[in-house]
Each structure stands twice: as structure tokens, then as C-alpha cells.
Image 1 (tube, helix red, strand yellow):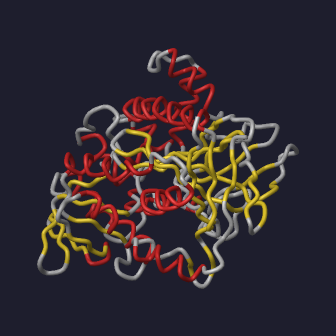
Image 2 (image 1 turned 180 degrees about the vertical axis):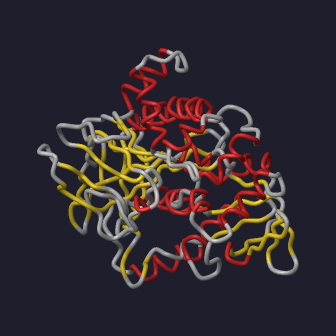
Length: 398
């Protein structure tokens, strides 16, 4: 059995939610609805080990592919990367291999057969950190189940010792409970003395970034999607600040290349050409764990269409064997109004039976400082969107 659901929801959910709030997870319930599932999913140990190995290999595949893209403006355009970022991508040093992003998350479908397929990489602003780093160890301890998630904070500390951000920012700091709680946890785990600010309070004067009247910002972690610099007011000024070196962001600007789902099409195309960019072992990993992905709808059978910079399922469309839309997310914002789409072979999520009913399970795996660590479960509909729930994933003993 690849997945086993254990435990039953505690009758005093209010007390449990209060305990989690004290730990920093203040959105176990959202607008009166349960977001956190008070049960634990246990993954087979051998499959979990393979998942970590797959993530390690794919991380270097993505890194190589992103570096292949750097400097090729035709590919920037093909990946829907906003033109305002191109000069910065060309001019800034990408750094050592494996570290274009130090805070990322792969999203996989892990079938009941044990088959593992990558759906996408959020290499820029993944949320779910508190759920994985704080709540999952708390749940696993209660059920005496193994977890490697306890090491997440150590990897964040190591990453930020290198990057040395002094500020952390999100939109709606102090009012948006999830994003605020996420950056506060990251700051706490970094071990650094840092100031949290609202992105909307930032202003830029001749490339220099300020927060309010008192702070000049030179190094910052921002839970702000870089692709929106091509859309938002002030985005051009922020891009200029990065390009000229006034501001250093964590993750680096080059994380936007990793973030584009178009990069999966680049990887698959290079794989089909048997490009020397990848080793034989990496080609084998691409074939085993990635899904054929293209920038045009070439499929005759089932496939998925989604925005290159879509988030929370908002642009996802699932097509059936006849090429007709079978499912479409109606809750999230469809970012394909701004960015191009990719077309990927369809791989549905496995179904697990929770106390509240059958749900489709998405398996996230954080990549922190280039290391796979931190399982994150999302349980919901066939498309994982804003209405999905968080369920902790532990690991069985071999």
C-alpha cells in the first residue's frame, strides 16, 4: 500500500486549531471552513525514497535547462517571461549550479501503483511552508510516524546564511494571514534578525528600494511572483533595481526561468533530441518522471492545458480522450490572459479516502538550498486549486 490514512478527526477541533495557531499556523480554518485535515497520510518508505531521488535528479535537470535558456531572448519570449526582466536575466550572475532558487517546491502525482510523475515546479514563491515544516512534524509525532520535514528549518537557515536577506516581504503583510505567517516562519527558522514588510509599502527612488520612511532595502526575501513585474505598477522600477544591483532578491531573478512551466517544454524538447546537455542518467530521469510537455496542443488523447505562470490551479483545463474540456478550475484566477499556455500529457491525481470523503491527493516536495526535504499534501478535487485542503504526509517505516 503506497498511501495509508490514519487517525480520525478529534471531536474538539476548536482546541486543536488553537494549538496550531500557537505554533504559527493560524489558517487551519479559513472563513469558517476547514483547510487543515485532522488526519495523517502515511507514504510507503521505498516510494518516498524514490521520490527524493527523483527530485534530486530533476532539480539538476531544471538547473541545466534554465542556464541553457539564459541569454536566449527567443526562449525568454517562448517561456512568456516579461520583457522587463530580460536585461536583468542577461546581466546578473546566475551563481553556482543548483542554487538558482533556494526555496522551491516540486508538485508530483504519486499513483497507488507507486508511479511518480512531476506535474510542475514552483521555484519562486511556494506557500505551504508552515504546513510542511511546522504542522507535519507535529502530526507525525502524535502518530509516531517518521518524517524528514523536521530538517526544513535547518536548510532554510543554511540557505539564508548564504543569501543574507535583512527583510522579508509579502503583499498584505499583517492582513493576509497565510502569506504573513509564511514569511514570519521563514524568518524565525532563518535565525536572522530581519524585518517583515508589506510589498505595497515599498517605494523606489533612482533604483534604491525603501520601506516606509525608515528603511533602505538591499537584500530581501519576497513572497512576490517575479512575473508580475511585467504587469504591476512599479514592476519596471523594481526590475531596474534588480538589474542594476541596488536590490538582491531571494530567490534570485533567474528563478523566474525555473518558474515558467514552459521550461518543461524546453526540457522535453531537448530530451527528444537526446541533447548532450543532459547525461544519460538525466535523460532516464526525464523519461521516467516527467510528462511530455509542449507549447502547442499536439495531443490526440487526454492532455492538460495551463498557463506558464499559473498558480493555485486557476488556469488548468483537463481534456478528455476526444479533445473536449472535461474539467476546468472555476475558482482561481486564469493567468493565461497575461501569459502563454503549455500543453502536457494528462496524469490524474490518486484518490485517498479521508473522513470527509474521497479526495485527490497532490504530493508536494520542497527543495530547500538544493536539497529535497519537506512533504506537503493537498487534498481536493481533480484539479488542485484554492479550495483544496492541507493534509500532512508522513513516511512509513521500512
